[in-house]
Image 1 (spheres, rainbow over the protein chains, first blue to last red):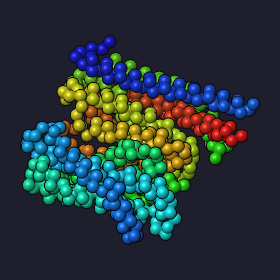
Image 2: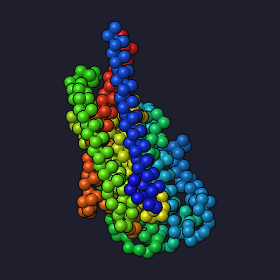
Image 3: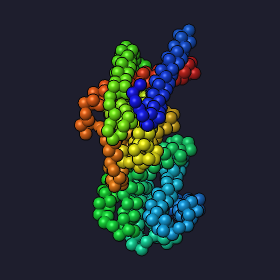
Image 4: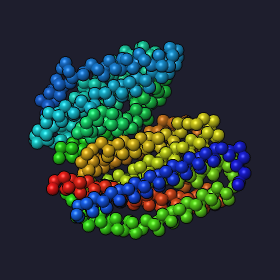
Length: 49
Length: 218
Length: 242
């Protein structure tokens, strides 16, 4: 761990929040993509019947 | 064209047209400011130009959704689209009507409200000038926003969200002119920039707004 | 009306989803490499101490916030001129990504500024401009959701993006004029204009690269979702009519 010194909270909170947002964005985008892909498959299957 | 303008003016000023609402809102806002920030006249004098500009801006915003929505609902917009008048002209006339019934009264009343807020003496003329130059722009930008949201049910809030960021440059330069005028400082730069923005907006936005209205009417 | 019949969306889905795995891995690699290098192996700044490490998140996110909007602008123009549905949907897909980038830029900017300036928020021209940009993003996304007809929504949001871009640019200059008195946020001007020492520069470029690829990957992913959503609503409508 680098010596963050007196700014430890500052730097860590900046990193923490940013990564939280990034991970959240990626997760949301991926889950939505997966859900919609499955939904489309279902719709196409039910219409092919 | 004159007929169209007169019609809009008449619509705005008749009983249900909400003509005086913007003025009353402006007055109420100015009344609320000292309650919010305290009655210290020195403080009020300092923020008076900004408050008056903000008040005029917000009061302008109020009457925007009526601008096009009424004509949209009763089909008049479709008729106007098929008339020989180009859409840009229709838009420009509507913006003009809006300014005549909202912006103009506001800028005439502003000095009176300035008295209540302790606006320094030198500030009155520059407040009026900046509002005179800025409020037509606000009407035009508002017209663009109204064109975007005309078909949307209860689009008033969305209209505000879209229009307020667009108001930022006008507000910055307009309020700066008023503020510098009140403090007796040199204000050529913000004045010129305000004029520039006003001219550019009034010349070009009608085309954008006309295009948007045509998109909505398809 | 059938969007699917155009080769464009189908080809887009095929191509983008073949690219995505590689793109994501590359983006992750660059991000991890850049951030680890910057966080663990770069020195402190003599003025700002260890807070300079925030640069590796603040600058790339700020860059993507702006470039995201520019991408939306180009996509909107392509839609208005050539009416490629994929383009319109790509703009729609990019907006939340750009908005999150703006939020990250704002948060890291505020956190970075706090020890330097003593307050959590200052009306520094750069921060203020990003706040305005965030509002533009919000308005754009709100308009997409408020209009029912997808083509009309694409039209209106494209026009908003166009006009908004002009005013965003105007606002940038207006805000600079409005607050030129304050120090130019020297701690925040460690961007490409000022030549930063190599010790900071290389990990920064790597992180920027990571962010760019991440943006690209997310937009490709989300555009695919939008295309599929459109296809679903077409199928549902068709199902209703039969």
